[in-house]
Image (cartoon, rainbow, N blue to C red):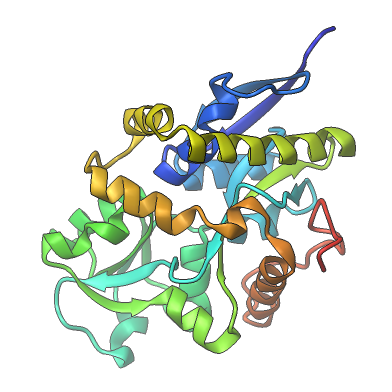
Length: 283
């Protein structure tokens, strides 16, 4: 029987390589599917979504709002949770009143980090895009006044003498009472529904394999991690791979809907289709 080929794109960050390591390395039975994969920075993945050709993509929830006509959100594999939000950090002490006038480094226009920042500070327009791993050094070099950090940088910024100004995840949690939606696994609407559901199930299997076989997965993770420190890698996975990674569930979907409601009110995303989740049963 000929296998069905599926293209899948995700980031080299430890949570993504943990999630997809078993799937793309043939460690689980893929039930007739064959995966061609590629890795890219989150903002590159976001922009690929706007072309609408890839079958499966990890992308920011912000970017999904701009690509929703071509994609649906899977229940599994994404990044969403409490205490996981992006951080606004600086080298010098700054005040709330001056944020809107500062030069801010962002990890991409279509990242959820930038979306949350835009919701909190809608008048802050002096932004410069950087690869997420370069933002700490840009602040230190005084190229920018402050920056929004994500991924591994969350665990290393204080080692470089930077200070936390605002935890944007905590800001979101305090006014919404919901977890922070960061990244989604999206399936192209052109993929038949039964195949899309099979992919969702395979992601769960890949996750379970990773939990049961940490030695294999950690070797794979270290090949691509920006920071090789074992403690940072472990902290990254423990924070971003959680119960919502296995299944968004009703609470996760509610958080996504609320993020889009708030972003729509702020005028920073377009209108979305009525159906955005592959599975609507938990709503």
